[in-house]
Image (tube, rainbow, N blue to C red; front, side, top):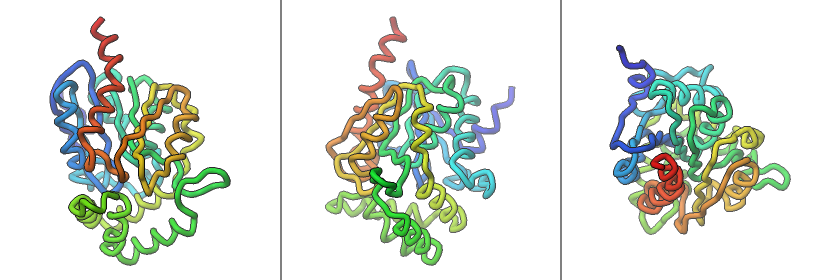
Length: 273
């Protein structure tokens, strides 16, 4: 039997084995290698699956400017991977924009998911009335204009803000290098999709048990965003990590993996009974 093409097209790799399968989904400007510190920790207890979104890593040829003009296309890609892996529901861990992608996927096909972990999610980056997403519409348009005019300058400006942890400059330098490797057309399109999307109404459609993992000091996802997401998920909980920045899987991998493992502990125990 030939393997499903979705696995090869998205450069799917597997680590470890265990009672649950965890699919790790990277955020904007990255690829699956961003999970290199967390994946081995989780693979001690679980099967861990890594993949590249279209336009990232080795999946650049898959990018379709029409299909991927919204997060729905990315969610459909995730569902194709889930179904190619097999019929058993899996745990989806989505960082940043991939948290919203996971929300859409779980709303469309709840049978594919045992649980969700939304790592530093933001269903809407733009402020709207009482909702504080962290940016004005003018802020976002300025960011996108800078990206279009000067990708390297945008990367140099954004990476330290996204990463936080100014006392550890190597983290921001790594993220800056990743941003610069993106194809410029894909970088601009995916940035527009990421920073202008509004998935707040989609949260109520997700019945899957979900953990919202937020950082104590995150310039991209203010503290109120985590509570907002938790309160609108029918089966959501919130944990705040005592770390800074928007990428705890790089800056605090041990704490991130431990939080995910703790969230899954009762599910593993029920499976063993």
